[in-house]
Image (tube, rainbow, N blue to C red; front, side, top):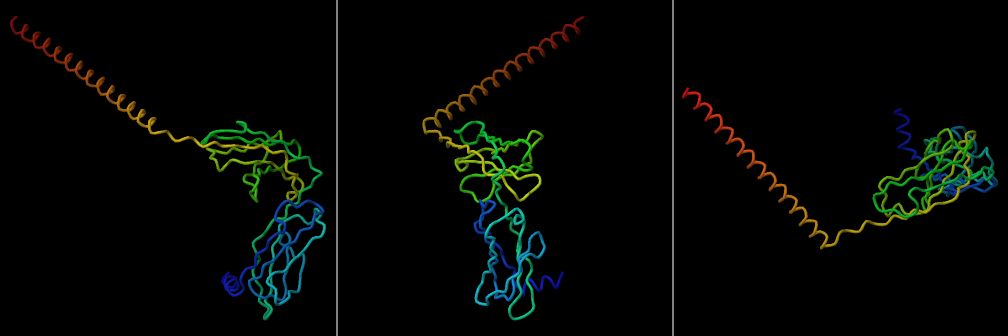
Length: 257
């Protein structure tokens, strides 16, 4: 453990990126770039933790590229990279992993619906339903303009999921779509399905006249409650006093006998 920490300090960790980072279909070209914080002699690319490719690095470059000219199902998976310093045999730790998810257009796209439909007020809970029977093992909710899915759910027995957006604000306005991963190939995705558009209208702030009217209403209610309380206390004291007088008269009557 201590040796690994020392090596991590002496040999900084590389980073790995995908280009393009999303929307890669089977048969498309994709490049994995290993970014090197120090000059390296050799760079290795790993898939699912196993060595896959090696490249001798130009000592003047800070990036080594691994390109797939026509991706297949075997290329999908989790990748990381590692390098060896050019001036020694010291080796870096692995980069953080990245996932290469490929879109298989032979899978039918999922269906989608929005409840309530289209325009809602701020603070409303919105449900987006996605379904496609017999295909999905996990559904992903996408929002246009976001690079990564915003939610992930496992479907029920009928192949449907319900994504809930709680207390929406105008920032939640936009176009949403669904995709799903298959049961057999977890790094293969369906195409994006049809879209639904959500519009969240901001709640208008009360005007000055409304604030004054509400304030007057509160004052009136408080005064009314106070009047009822005072009246109730008065009735209680009158009844209590009368009861005392009656007891006193009974006691005096008893003494006379």
